[in-house]
Image (cartoon, rainbow, N blue to C red; front, top):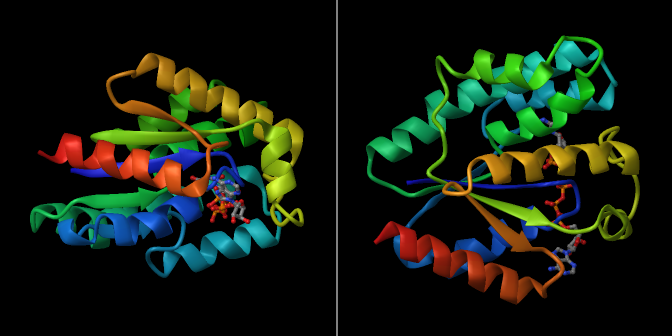
Amino acid sequence: MLVTIEGIDGSGKSTLVEGLHAALADLDPVITREPGATWVGEAVRRSIAENTDPVTECLLFVADHAAHLAHVVRPALARGQIVVSDRYSDSRYAYQGVTLEGVIPDPITWLRAVHAPFTLVPDLTFLCVLPVSEAEKRLKAKREHFEDAEVLERVQKNYLAFARAEPERFVLVDALLPQEDVCGFVADEIRRRAQ
Ligand SMILES: Nc1ncnc2c1ncn2[C@@H]1O[C@H](COP(=O)(O)OP(=O)(O)OP(=O)(O)O)[C@@H](O)[C@H]1O
Ligand SMILES: Cc1cn([C@H]2C[C@H](O)[C@@H](COP(=O)(O)O)O2)c(=O)[nH]c1=O
């Protein structure tokens, strides 16, 4: 089973995933992330830091996804393990759907077409939702160019549209709840679906 955790910057994904390590330890899941599960992530981090052009940046994120699938996700699924990924393809559709606006016509359709021949669609996606104003408070310093309130509003709007379009895959998570409640809710739902 492939489970992904999505949401805007500061929505609590990394904190949640850290909690899932302990909460799901008996299921021996592979807990992973995008970008950064393979060396390609280093190129992505450099492109973010250097504010490179949006097409180059997008294609590096896509390359990171391809390497993640080939070297981490597919092998773990083949071994029968549950995979939990902190960000995955929906991050591209939501974020690069914004950064490629005005650069490529209909970017989300293009992004989905680029992924379709090689990606694996997750079985279950948790979308951490909280007001952008709260996410900004949680992000102590603006670290990346995506962490701009106007960009994050548009990214969250994309995510919510994806969740409406695929209600059987997406589970909305109230990211304003205390960390323990968020983790408990998500862990219970993964256990229920894994049965
Ligand atoms: N449920 C919560 N309630 C209050 N604060 C939280 C909660 N979850 C996480 N935080 C805090 O919010 C900040 C951002 O959390 P975290 O790094 O997990 O978000 P993220 O979604 O992984 O962000 P990014 O995408 O930018 O890496 C951290 O300081 C974390 O301790
Ligand atoms: C996978 C992915 C990520 N991003 C953006 C979202 C964040 O601002 C940064 C780094 O992610 P992290 O969770 O803070 O480590 O990259 C993106 O724009 N597109 C993607 O596909």
